[in-house]
Image (tube, rainbow, N blue to C red; front, side, top):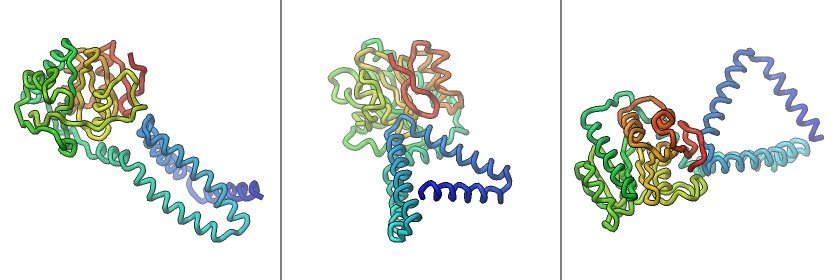
Length: 298
């Protein structure tokens, strides 16, 4: 009986397709496939991907058990409850995927059309690169978030407001071992050091390799929640990394770091991954963002 019902549904679907133009059907399927592909790629490697698989399995199971069985056995009440359950699932999906939806809307609202490398931005990049090299040579841990379109004020609770000029010397002083603010992050906003001692949100533990510590998890976590550029220097190895859009670019040379900052802060359109591959051959890329594919770290 179940096989007969399935066959009837398939035949009905095929008959309904005959009422449409083949080009119209092909276009609709292409659009639907593109949306599904974008969603799956956006969620790939994140907690949302596991939730999506679980919800899909649950819906398929409920469709087979309740919808088809209630149609075969004429169980009207079960069919009524099943339809209300689908409405509940639709609302639950919005709640469960709230972080992913927020990131997607945030990225849709980003714009880089009118940015350009100015002398002020060039000075900021010089200060960031100089400080990163200083910390790298001495194996001093550093964590810096460069604000772009999305404000980072929501992450500054219990932090120290500085509103100071962005200089390599001040950054080096902040991150110097045993200084009061060295163990947390710094936020750079509008070309100034706005806050220090900031606790960044941490990425999920399964998203990064075990050898990477809390600084790298904080860098990736902040880059997932905002459009900020996160500069991180490892205290153990001295490696310089950049986190952007959930992707961590590790073991960068000073030249690669400068090129990436100029591209991202200046509003260019070149892929960050391509810059890393061209200028920093020993680098590794970790993450599942839209601009890179995951590679094993070193």
